[in-house]
Image (cartoon, rainbow, N blue to C red; front, side):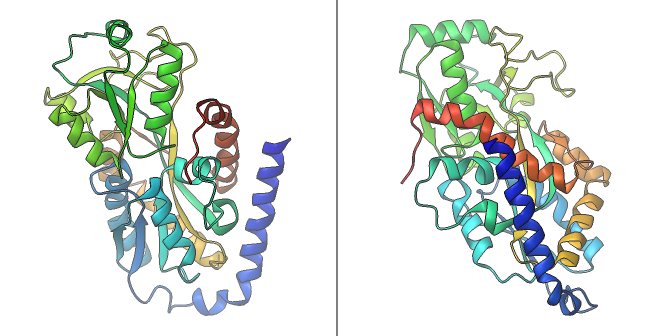
Length: 330
């Protein structure tokens, strides 16, 4: 019931925001919009999955909208810095956000003093891609598969560290799910994005991580060891790599959805124009190749209603885990 109410509430708020903005829509939806560059805030550091996606779709969005779409990285606080800046921006279509699903769905569950409410203050515009996480280790670890790795962790409780883009991110939650499913102990080290975490895995400061995609090139270069994917199905890029469920951890699913958002109050015609530009970008072969190169799956067919509903489902899915681990950030 709570999930249904959350979805209905977001539907109502979205309709109010969109319908209420129609008074301003004629001016903003005229030939004058967009008449200057549009800022696409990416709320994680350069080099991570969100950054790579933002830089992949922005040229095609620019072409579709007839105006430059400029990526602006605003990392920090697990995406909250970028979300907050988006929420505070003018509701005129010149500031957009590309965020992981965790920043929108999970952060309200773990941060007790957020100065904004993503459910009320953002409009979900378009899904971009479903991001999977890949369990990768340093090549020096004496393990060849998940079973070996679990035994190694059990023999070295609390001695290994794994990194993530931040508390509550899908790689972090995947790490906590893994620890509980495998009955192992390890130290979580949060970063301001996937890029910095990847750097420390490569340097050996971290022994493993759940990669949201940027590390796959390092796997191919032999600098990381890929053991499994944390999704319900195998990746078509790595069909021989098993899922964690196949490796003895049934039901393991740590997928998350990345997408584009606008501040609540942005005129409906502008929202639809932005959505159309994102969908146009997802038709481009080079964009699809970049997304798939991250091990992710493009989501061009997800409707706005499905995108809205997805957030409430994610809150419901991860709330018990967050409560169990006592994940709270003040």
